[in-house]
Amino acid sequence: MVDLYRFKQFDDHAECIHAVTTKIAQEPFSFSLALHTGEDRASIIANRKKVSSLLDINDTLHFVVANQTHSDHIKVITKEETKGWEDPEDAVADCDALITDRKGVVLTVLTADCVPVLLYDKKKKIVAAVHAGWKGTKEKIVVKTVKKMIDVFKSEPSDIIAGIAPSIGQCCYEVGEDVAKYFFDMPKAFHQNKEKYMLDLPYINQQQLLEAGVKEEHIEMSGICTACESERFFSYRKEQGCSGRFMSLIGLNPDYALEITERYANHCTVATYGETIDAPTGAP
Ligand SMILES: [Zn+2]
Image (cartoon, rainbow, N blue to C red; front, side, top):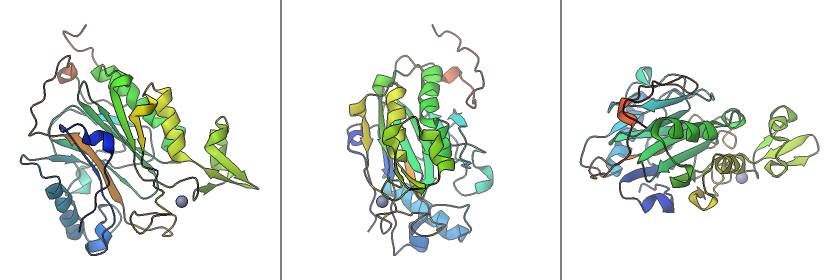
């Protein structure tokens, strides 16, 4: 049986598709969805097709996979186009956050301890998927992604709902001062244990979302530690360098007729964070 983790607040929006996959012992490679970690490609593609069928959408979906590099690079996907789904060579290069307004485009994040964050602007109908390990968290990739949604799509942070998916918790994430030092300005982000620090990446990402203007009641934390629950989720630490990855995904249901107003995105081109985008013609 396939078990998908879901966020309660996203389920209130029928036009928004989302899911977080789990480990399934009976499936090839425990239902890993990573094509970049050396497993048999055909088996992983079969697992991915199973995810697609589980979403129960009549129309064709375009899954977008990024080649995650622990960066703060953000891409806005402007075309209904599949990327990196059956061939890692055509994945979105060097990128850790994806945003789209396109119906039927499903944005994905692959993790095994890092923090996956799903965002949905329920008014403008914009989705985003973010991969935040300690490096991305240090770079405030979730803040930059919200900012990008504001810049490109005129999102209001108060319209954004966020889900912080299962990731390694403070209970299990021991780091040295070389990593902890970047978060010393947040006393609640870590517990010091002699020379070591127990770092709370989900908490830090929650705080960063608040800093970006997302309302506290709109941030849903899974509260699940991947290392504590390594039977259900892949954990790189707990499994001492496992190659399996689970997938967090979000998209706009193409079967659902969206009534969209104040949409400027059609005029935008694909841009990485930090690049300038031509002002949309006709926008105020
Ligand atoms: Zn734990």
